Amino acid sequence: MYPVDLIRKTRDRQPLTPEEIRFLVAGAAAETIPAEQLAAWLMAARLNALSLDEIRLLTLAMRDSGERFHPHSGPNPIVARAVDKHSTGGVGDKTSFLVAPIAAACGLIVPMISGRALGHTGGTLDKLESIPGFRTALSLDELATSLRANGLAIVGQTPALVPADRVLYALRDRTATVESPGLICASILSKKLAAGLDALVLDVKTGSGAFLRNAAEAEFLAALLVSTANAAGTRTVALLTAMSQPLGSAAGNWIELAEAVALLRNQRSPLTEDLRLLSLHLAGWMLHLGGIAQTPEDGRTRAERSLADGSALDRFLAMVAAQGGDPAVFDHPEVFHRPAVTHTLRASRSGRIVAQDTTALGWAVQRLGAGRETVGVSIDPHAGIHFHYRTGDLIAVGQPLATLYASRSDQVPEAITRIESALTWEPSDSSQPSATAIAPPVPVVLQIIDADRAAAILAKASNLR
View 1 (tube, helix red, strand yellow):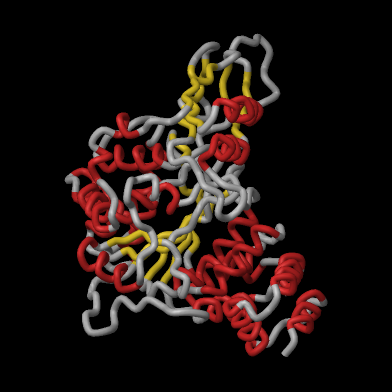
View 2 (cartoon, one colour):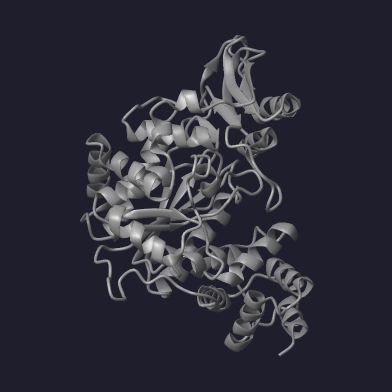
């Protein structure tokens, strides 16, 4: 086979055979197909949607391109069911630090393989590595040891785990081919299925801070993920969730971890209630699919109980210690958090915030030093933003809007500009009706997509060949 022939076929909307897909994936994993040809095929796949069969074959071929984790086999198998959660990404999305220890405290194991920050969204691994000494690069044997001891581990992709995805993911980011439902599906699920999961809960985000802002596109991606994962033998459900404003109040690295630990310690705030509720929804579904709870509602009750009794916090801190981190930093987070620059942004007007461009807010966080645009760039663990408002809040002039933490003072002005331009205001002192209606609060969970719902969505989708 020749790569150029496969590029031509996808370009001309001709489906690839299973043998051709396996050849393409093997060439990516072994790096025997030149990057320019892989990039050309990715663009063809981005412009001409892959068929459902092609997406499923691509996912499985990528899953099998390297070593796999088998928690229930070998000389010392783990009996507890393996269930994970995956989010498509957003601003301030730190639910992993809540749902993983909650699920582990309730009797599941959570082998969570996570990624790094790219673009306007943060990365779970970068956040964890803001803890002194924390190791995300574990071998599969170390992963198994941590799961047996604590029930959870949050790690990065090993060099031998799904190597095809590592190559293709980096190319997608550099070739404007990220926003392809089929390629996103194969990338996400190849890693999750390689972890030997019994069940998977997906958090597919839509709104101004999501990769897929359009609700119909996000719904289609959720259905594609659910259908593909279930066809591969992993029981899966997707929650379509709102990303129309930052999740919680913190967006960055260390400050997101500190916020998550505060919730694990039952320290509630109106600014973080959306984060708490979403985490309980996700954990409830994990416990239901994992056989711990009869219903998702029962799962949420059990999840909330693990927060109240401190068992979820204990699991999180045990994971930090097991992976080389220092749990003591959470005893006095305000002492550990020492950013180079701190700036308080105050409102220059009075009014009600009725909408936010959350992607722009994510870029403000990134520009302060908390994220990266290209692979390999170092980040500042203490950079980020604390937001002091929610959509719908009435703000007085001079009131603090956000606290900015930066690596350098010259990074602050651009971040301020991005924040101010991201907010849509409605005057509070006008005698005339405003053209912008006050938006009602957006529910945390917009839709549940199970196997039956996924099949119905895909059946009527118009962009499949």
